[in-house]
Structure formats: C-alpha cells, structure tokens
Amino acid sequence: MSSSPTEGFLWTAALVLALATATSASAEAAPLSARESDPRVMGWMQGFPPPADKIITQPDKVYFSFPKLRWSVCHLREFLPTEAISRGLGAPVPLSYPPAADFADLRARIDALSFLPIGASTPMTWEESLDANYTDGILILHRGRVVYERYSGCLDAAGKHAAMSMTKSVTGLLAEILIAEGALDDTRRVGEIIPEVAESAFGTATVRQVMDMTTGVRYSEDYADPKADIWVYSAAASPFPKPADYKGPDGYWEYLAQVQPEGNHGEAFHYKTINSDMLGWILSRTTGKAVTDLASERLWRPMGAEQDAYQTVDGKGVPFAGGGISLGLRDAARLGLLMLNKGRINGEQVFPAQVVEKIAKGGDRTRFSGYPTLPGGSYTSQWWVFHNAHGAFAARGVHGQTIYVDPAADMVLVRFASHPTASNTRIDPTSLPAFQAVAEFLMRQD
Image (cartoon, rainbow, N blue to C red; front, side, top):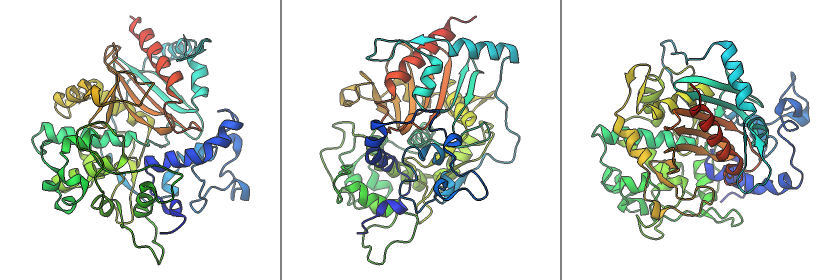
C-alpha cells in the first residue's frame, strides 16, 4: 500500500481526527488564539496570486492542520471533488428576524451572559466562549425567529462550511424518514438489502444496529499503526488515481464489503464512521438515489434552503455519507427547525412527526459509554441525545460543529467552528454550559 494515503483521502471524520492527532501537540504547545489564527490575519490565499507561503493546496498533506484548517473548512470543494445537494429552482423561504433594534439588543444581552465552564472555577461570558471555541459562525433561533447571528474566520452569510460528522445526522434522518414511511425496515439484515456485503461483518447486522452504531465490526483508528484500518479506508476512499502497485479496495463500498467482525452486534455503542457509509449505501439501494439527491428531494427543497450544499465523493462518485457535507449556516438552522418542530417548516409537514419523536427519545443508554462530557447520554439514528432536563439532542461534528435542539426552550442553536483540537470532549466544557445558559435566558423572555 502507498505510504502516503492521506494525499488523496476523502474527508472522513476519522481522518479529521488523525490530522488533529498529528498536529495537536504543536497546537497545544503554543496555540494561536482565535483572533491570531483568523484566516484573514494569517493571510491564507489572499492576493492574485497569493504569496507562495500563504497558498494552501491539495498536494499539501497538512491542508487540514491548524491553523490552515481555519481557511480550509470553508473551501473543501477546492481540495476534493464534490456533488451538489440542490436547493432547487424556487425562491428560498426567508428566516424570520425581530426588528433591527430588538435584534441588536438581544445580541448584546446574550454576549454578556455568564456561565461556569465544566470543571472551572472562573465564569466565562458567552462572547468569550465564541473565541475560546474558534467559532466561525453561530446562529440561534427562538420560537422560530433568529435572535442571534454572528460570523467570523473564513465564514460569512454567503459562505459554506464543512459540517464534518453532522453529515451523519443528515444520513440518519433520511433513514428514519424512510422507516416512518414504510420504505425501509430497520429490523432487516443488511446482507438481505445489499448482497454484496453478505459475507462481511455488516451482512448479519440489522439496519437499526448500523443506524445506532452498535455493530460488531472491526475498524481500528490507531493512527500510530500504519496498518490500521483507518489507513486502508483512507486509501480506498481517495478520489484520486491509485498508485500503480495499489491492491486494496477501491471506493467506500468495496471497503465495506470486506469488513471483518469484532465483537457481537448489538452489545455496545462504538462510534465508527464506516457505519454511516454503510447506511448511505442502504439508503441508495432502497431508493435508487444517491444520498445527495435524496437529501435535496426530502430536505433542502421542501425546507426552502437558501443555498445548494455540496458533499465530497470517492473515486466512483459515491458521496461520503459519514462526513462530506458543506452547507450554509442558515440552512443548518433550517435543518434544526425541522427537528425542533417535528418535521414541520414554512407551514408544511415535510416528514412524519414520529421521525423526530423516535430520535429525541434516544438510544439504549446502557450501551453508551466513554464520553465524560455526555454523562447519561445516548446515540441513535446518528444523532446524540443528552437526556437532560430540556430534552436536548444534537448533530455533532469534530472541531466544534453542532446543530443543538432544545425543545424545552423552543431553541435551535447552530455553530460552525475550526477549533485546533478535533475532539468535542475538549470543546464541550465551554460549549454545553454556554448552550444551557442561553436556553435559560431565552426561556425567561416574554
């Protein structure tokens, strides 16, 4: 196998973590602040042409290392081939905003909110938390109206940002819609739907076990081991020509067909991106459509999206169902509104309410462990469920991406970020108390 599989790797959450692991030591030793690492301050890709030392290109293996990632998260289609998630040809349906003076007042009051981060003894303000988490864009909806919106770093209102593993939640949502409509049976064995994987570890798993990531499949993310599964997967997923001596699987689906067993299906939650790509294949085989077309038809068009999204693809044109979407902040908010309002938006019922009811109920909490910032949580249908007093649940992605839905507060909060450390366990201590603080503030409003 080639010794440099990352050159052509197709944007999986696992590689994002790998890159973070490889670069976090230097980032932690002397991290640049959010303002110091702002792409405009750094000068990345500015000028015609940019200076040689400010160019970020695909052959550069560290294009997604900090601080370069703070530019790259808004420019994935310049590094990798993509396929559109079309919003269609109709006019977008605008989000609702308060009068300008009220909006400005709400922003100032939210910025001044104070909370205590997890494990800290010193309070932090909401505004301080934005820089602490390297926030590129954040938007809050309350009772259906935008009450806070702010952009920084590489992002503006017209831009698109990598959603990372929030993509998984879109894939899981589409699966739940098909289940609610009777088009997909989550009790069926995967091998019955996709005979190509009948002999792999996935063949005997149920669709539900794939959706909830309780499959017993071997998938190692030991980045120090050059023979770990992550590197085989990365090489297979590359959209670029394989080396002449390459003999491994070609594309996501060929890789999935040779996955070996490890443990028993249904025993425990194991967060493995290959489950999401398996689910994407199940959706495509069931509907006869790529997940990009399915997302366009079932979500982007009916929700009145402002922008097309795009999704990275492998060398055979298969969209990366586990982490390849980039989209606008406001459209991420629309997805959140769909979840908050149980499938209803702009006066239309886009999908059955039972879809969200199933997700919000959560998964088996006894099978969920290893996430100290999410005590008592669960995972189901590729969504994270907090089981807190507000009934909150979320789509989450590395480096700080989130669509956070708080039904008790009638609130949706969406954030794009480019934190130097990938793992959300480093970001949650300031994020989750901040989300709770703003939810409680909004609940006190008339």
